Image (cartoon, rainbow, N blue to C red; front, side):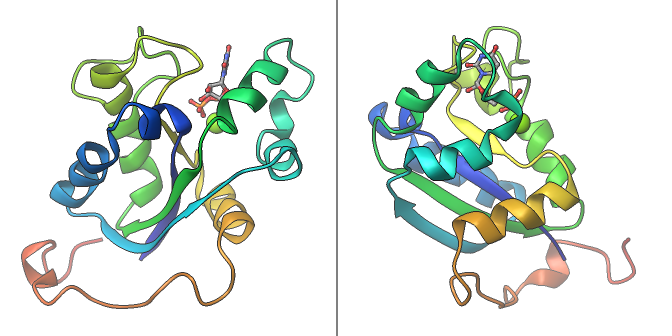
Length: 153
Ligand code: UDP
Ligand code: MG
């Protein structure tokens, strides 16, 4: 099944929202196949946010992403990338729809609680960036038949 990377950012850690956010993904029916805490550094952040290094807000983003350890997760499911992005909401928490994670927990364009991969291709690249071989597991929930129809695409 499709995999995607989620990062619970320092804003989620400092604000005590870890359980709340993980609960949402589990309740949705996404399967957690990787999960760990790690401290990000400038090297990995320059890679991860390569599309933003020239932006004036990049130094602030760097500082924000290193302000606490983060939690990285591999979530698995049919169309996991698109589904998780929908659950995440628009980048700016003030513009994100109520019901989305950012819409419900963030008032900020920077301190927006979660990162989620934006395409299947980037999901693969990002998972390889944050997880070592062996840190993503392969298992099937015992009640998977109640998550999906047998022939569901
Ligand atoms: N960001 C910011 N100011 C901006 C745009 C982005 O601080 O004007 C931060 C924000 O934390 C965002 C991250 O940079 O989540 C990555 O930006 P991207 O455009 O990839 O948004 P995302 O994919 O996270 O919605
Ligand atoms: Mg992005």
